[in-house]
Image (cartoon, rainbow, N blue to C red; front, side, top):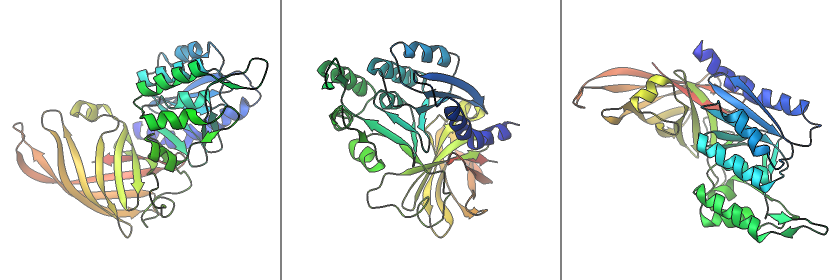
Length: 334
């Protein structure tokens, strides 16, 4: 049952968000909706952010221990965007802008609050300087930019990112690209739901030189993980960690596998988790199967004794199944 619920994240989270956004398309002020999808809450935000909307978000998010916040908004109140972003970071939520959706201005500031930030290849995230309008043309607000800069610094973003985010004039928009994100130190996982791993060095084709890594979501042993790909490099990280692995010491963002994809075959290092002994490495390898929808890795996992010494080995299998719609992956340990 848990496995079926996890698969629903890949099948319905995006579809549900897009459907909801279509229903709310006439709304001007922001709407906040939440639903449960497998083992994670999805909070959808659409429309213009207004002063006080941060309180609406607090009320919606308060009861959630883990959530993905999905955005489709042209912006709005600077303070509302900042406060929503602070709440997202405090709760440890992830943020996501799906294909065909836009998150700009104050919305983009809120999106930056994600503990893990996702954007689809067809999603748009835009930044510009804070401004006041009054009766004339928009005028850059020094105090607004100071507030935005302080918030961005609290998130741990470098100075180059702060300048990039606040540099565009109020009448312009700086649309985020994966290359710009990498260049300015903005950590973002770019999801491409149109492609699985084609086994030729990257998801959806060969990357351009210096391109930012792409990410997809997969299922693994009742946990959800994401696969980061750049060139031939492949890295699986935990996104949603099942309770037994939490007890063993795994956390969201913990590395599960690092290796390379060559000729539709993975090889590299897998990691066991032990609260007493820490992470333990061993070598695994295996094929990409089912039209690039599944990866099965096998190796000899060490049997670790209470004193952290290796007392033997066992054959271990890690199976990863692509969650097609979102393009994020999960891995399964047997």
